[in-house]
Amino acid sequence: MGAAQDLLDQARAAYAEHDWPRAATLYREARDDGATLTPHDLAHLSDAAWWLGEVDECLRWGEAAYRGQLDLDQRSAAAMTALGMAVSLLLRGDEALGSGWLARAQRLLDDLPDGPEHGYARYLVEVEGGLDGDDIDAVAAAARDVRAIGERHDDLNLVASGVLGEGRALIKLGEADRGLRLLDEAMLAVRQHDLAPEWAGNIYCHLMAACHELADVGRARDWTEETWSWLDDLPAAVLFTGICRVHRSQVRQVTGEWRRAEEEVAQVVEDLADLHVATVAEAHYQLGELWRLRGRLEDAEQSYDRARKLGRDPQPGLALLRLAQDRPDDAAAGIRAALLAAGDAPLARARLRIAQVEIALATGDLEVARRACAELEDTAAAYGTSGLEAAALHWRGAVALAEAEPDQALPALRAACRRWRDVHAVYDAARACALLGEAYDAVGDHDAAEAERRTADDTFEGLGAAVTARDVARRSTGPGRPLPAGLTDREAEVLALVSEGMTNRQAAEELVLSEKTIARHLSNIYTKLGVSTRTEAAAFAFEHGIAGDRGRAGRG
Image 1: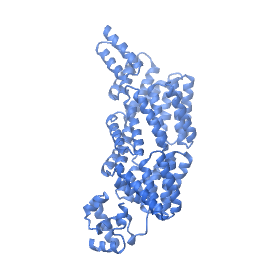
Image 2: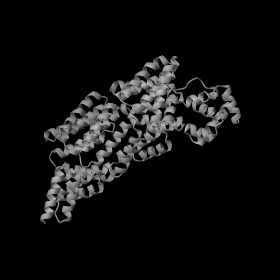
Image 3: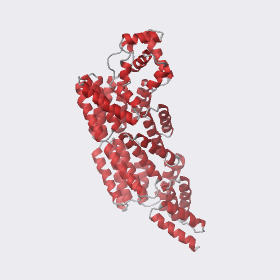
Image 4: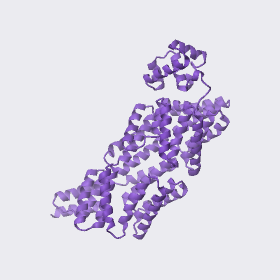
């Protein structure tokens, strides 16, 4: 029995040092050798399994710890164990069992005097659980209460979490400066190593999420790298590593490291499949974004669908995919519905409005484009973050181009290019360069226009986004000179290719569309032109300057 006790002592020491792999191994070996694990030991074994991403083991030992704690009338400890069980189940998407364990915890807490356990329950239910809801004022009030409970009971985890929760709520309420100051305050406790690792990790995750929500590209990059450094010092942290991978992928998407970004989220899908459904859903959405940008439209469709099935709204990516699939009406309808669902949340609406401007310009709906851009500019002015300000300038310039006002477009697009480059957003900078080239052409500076187009084309080629980016550049300029017979820009492209003698298959390959879509466009073209053969359509194209003109312009 001495050897078993020695193993148990080593397991406890390893757990105290946050060496969860070693702790889990030693606890199991001690138990197999006949040592009796106390409820406290079982709770630690459950916790170690959670850090290792072994959810079934975490739940197994957590339930054993809970029953042992009740048997010994350790009701406070049992309530905390029940909260942990609830979190693990809810993270993996098991709503029924998770809610059941949460109810157990709250029932136990109802019979206990005020203590830190009540603060943890309120944080999980009213702060974490309320941030995606409609009553953000109530979230801020609950966060302040959590902080007060922590101060009464000298619990630094609760104090920091309350500060963090209020900061995130204030950001959502439009008070970005106050909110960010509170997030910085919460980080002081993390940097001073005052918090338990799980609560330090929670704060890191919220900081990365807030920066992404704000489109604060510089902060997002800095916090993601700091989180990764923190993770490097831990022996195991499967969940937090997965969450950080998603945010690192988002940063790498912005900075043009698309293949590495794809590898990051593909790893998340594999590692967190049974651990955290929301993060896996976000990983699928992120894969959809990357594949859409690279022109892998069928793969993107599948990824957005997987994200939706896991509870992640696939907008605005899905609407932009519909645009890339040459389904502009579906794209416009999808983004309108998403805006209705977003309600009055300004940051959520900002991402949707960016997509709506692009879609509206592609379809020639300048009124919608103006309204969407105006709201985006208001949000950028209110929050003042690098990504929002750059996007507002970018799309103000695009709208001005569509309105044939290049003198207004030029300064906005030059500023957008500079802002995007300042935060190393290479793809967005290239898109702004392509538009800037259009603006220079419009004011007669063709040398500058050619230089900007060359810069954009080089970037697109390096990213592997040539086809998608050329489509985006074409659409972003809005409608150009009026087309005859009511042809759309895409129909003019198809007609130009047909007039050059291309088959449907060749035109489909050139435009990265299906042959079925090309055939549908040809049918519409024949109807609009009042012709019935390719020869007649080609004759119309040459007569009206479409052959070799608009088609080649659209294809770069």
